[in-house]
Length: 482
Image 1 (tube, one colour):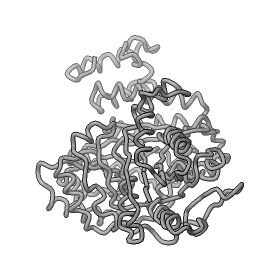
Image 2 (cartoon, helix red, strand yellow):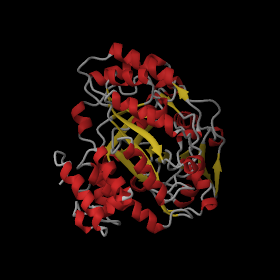
Image 3 (spheres, rainbow, N blue to C red):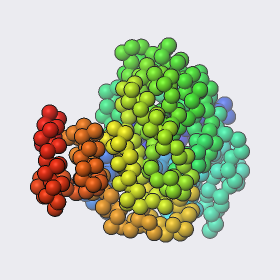
């Protein structure tokens, strides 16, 4: 049996390699030949943007189809995320048209929760895996090889005549020990640099102890890998790779994180690549901050989302702003490079709350901020409660919020403008100067409006305010501010 796995993404696909490794370590599937087709999505998005209906015969899509056909797949597995699902299913449909005997199975967080809808809509799609893919895919391949009925394959949705059948979820969890050596062989650093997101992804655990309403990680409990993966992780860094840990809460399991970092410090070379992690600031003490620095962490994404206690509670997210501020101070003291994520559109928050969130960060010396709009990810608790908060999400990926009871469409658009101005202004001055200007202006939003075009100060309606702001600019002439 020939299995071809396809992924279009922004970085080399960890999902494909995990699936392939799991199949190859199954002694009952030794006769399954696995081929990986892993491509940067950017050229495909550019082509799709130039024509919604036609791809030329010289296109990346046409060459991809020829490569998939050359692998002669009995089963074509398509890994789907919100940025790739539509193009990936369109490619799979063309392969199916040219090779009708191929069974097309899709998996990933954007398709599993809406399996029945996609099977009803996409005639070329035969099967959909819900949840983690390793157990269902291995069971599916075994059933097909033996000629067994599909109703025993866990986590599988499939078409049976005119009906769509959804099998129960798998019992138990994926044995992550079977994914050892998932990046063997690893692409070169030069190959990875050619991708839009030049990192190798790596898991030390799956799942999340939190149940944030806008996220899918918390749908499964934490499943940590045994710590014998450290040599594998260090070897990737020794090759010069910057490795992104997919764990959404690496620092939350604090003692485990410290164990991993200590082992990595002992193993990695001084000239090795680095780590990119996601962190909860309130879990970082001085020891953990020191270990993060020594282990080669070069970038950290820190989740705050909002400083509104109401908003955090509505999203079922832990809230402790004092501990967040203390953790941020420790990261800054140890010269860790980090940015903070915020979300516009959370229920029980408003545009004013978002401005307060940016102000809170600014007052703590943070101007490297990534602000996103809330997404209605299929299967997330937030979508299930959409009507409760009057939330209207876009009907297709990336499922962005269009409006809600607390966030009229005009406020979402206004937030985008303020975020762009915040980013532009923060690149021109020190945080303490920007915070001082915001206080004098009577609020961060007033400052951003008044300086929208990079000046002029005199455009402020209040002449006295204009004079005071101009004086601060003159006083801070040693900075990069005009």
